[in-house]
Each structure stands twice: as C-alpha cells, then as structure tokens.
Image (cartoon, rainbow, N blue to C red; front, side, top):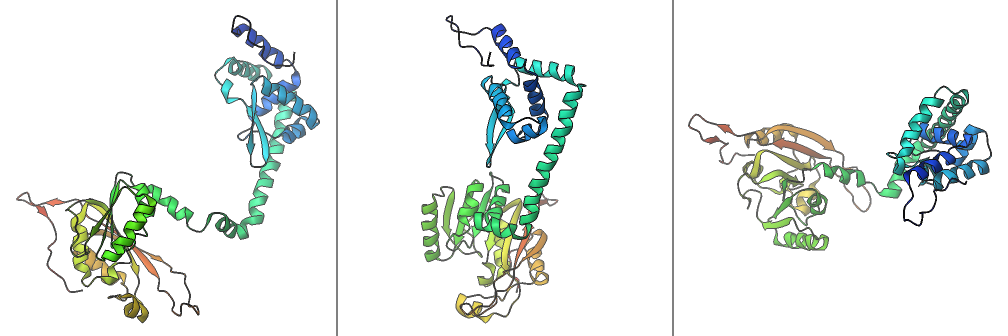
Length: 357
C-alpha cells in the first residue's frame, strides 16, 4: 500500500471502515509517525523538508517520499511562505478520525525516548531558524526605513490609521479647497460634507470627487464663519490649513461648535507662529500662525473642551527653488461637551457675539 485512499467502489462511496484502515496503513511506518509528531509540534507556518531532514537525521529524498505519502493521504499539506515550501498537518482532517488517531498517538508515544529526542532536536532546529530570521532584521535595521519607503512609499501607514475612524460618522471637511483630504477620509466614514467659500476650489474638488467616485461626499458653498450645515450634524469637523485665512477665527470656532454633535470632535491643522512674509503676500494668509497659549482660550470661549496640541514638523528646508523655510505645523484636537441643561430646561450654549482676536 502506498498510503493513498482507495478509489470509490462501484456502489459510489468508500466506507468509513475502509478509510480508517487505509489511514492506519499510511501511518504504520514508524518514520511517518515521527514526521506526524514533528508536524504537530511545529507552530505555523510548519516545517521545511530540510528542517525535517536535519531533525530526523535522514536524507531529504527520504523525507520527501514520506511527506508525499502523507499529503496524498490528506494527512499533511504544503503551502508556500516566501521562497520556501512548508509542510504542516492538514487542516481538513482536524475534526475527522485522524484527530482521534493523533490524540491516541500522543498518549501512547508521549514518553517514547526516540520521540523525545526528536522533540529536542526540533527545538534546536527551530532555534536556529529564529536566529537566522532575527539576523536578517538585525542586518537590515539601519536601512529598513529606506527599504520600506522604496517599496511602499512614505505615507501608507498614516493612511492605514484612517481605518480607525468610525464608519457611522458624518465628517465635515471645512475649507476643503480642492478636496485633497476627501479621498483619504471618505472611504472610512458614512458621509462627508465638504465646504469652501471659493467656487473655483469647489469645482476642482468636484472633479476629484467624480474621478475617485466618492459617492458619500457632498460639496457645499459657504464660509467657516457661516457654515451651510444644520446644528449638531457632524461627528468630526476637519479644518486643515484654513483658519489662517479667516478674518475672525472666533466666529469660525463658534460655527464649528454649532455644527458639531454633542461630544463631536474638532481636528484643526495649522501653522505655528512664524515670520515668513511670503504666506501673507502671495498666499493670502491673514494670520502668521497660532500659538497654543493664544488659540486655546478662543477654542474654549467658543465652547469646546479638552483642547490638546501636537507639533507636526514640516521638514522642508530652504532650497534654491523654494527660498523659505516652512514653519512647523500643529494639530489641535478639541470636542463639544455633552449639553448642559439649565434649571428651566433649555440647552446652555456659548454666545455668538464677536470677540476680538
């Protein structure tokens, strides 16, 4: 017998008893039992033929012949991992008679001296495998960032983090411009309301939305100081490099408070204080950046709480083509609190009078 399951009989099926007998015949060879034991001990992805050969002290050709018999009998299976072929116990038989046979084998051979010696040699083989694997990373650690960037780019990990967004959220991209943020956030939320005061910018954003087939994005014309969004509509308000263009930031912050849901979040990205006149002269900046100690009180005056900051280094130095050093950016996070109910049962909100910046 070569270990193969018999072909179906003329009646159209193979009896369970026949399958059981054939499985016993396949495993009657002591070497296959030892291989079965090693495959059971090995963690994923399994064992290479060379590792089995080293453990059992047999030629690879002999090991390959026995492994093929186990595969033909559906007791083992093979899968590719990188450039290597790994052998492991068949997952298809985990709940069959083979599972019972494996349990019986463990109980009978658990104290066998040869089986224990195989286990010790396997542990040493796997230790060498781990050392080789770790050496690869140790040798490449100094260039690992460069290698990964060459293969996958330098922003895939940041875009992957967007999957943490709640898929039920409605997000506002306030001051969307040409919609550069829309392809990033739209796939991860229920809806995006993109607002901008410039018709030309919205046209460009619309072309991007159409090209990317972002069906959950709605474009609206409006200013941050008077948002075309109903009260309490947004779970997140995203304001990216926009506030420095606004004449009165406190009005914009109060509008953002208004359109956020209770416990909704504002994420604001802008420049820290700087002296780069080009931004004012050529790019229409009204404000030369914002310091935390100046902007935080205005954010709190607008009614938002839990204000936190994090600096984002621009990492763009002065060059011949771009003769200015870009200031650092910051990201600020704040949120609208849960509503407070007054003694007469009305919601308490901050006033909407203008406050001088």
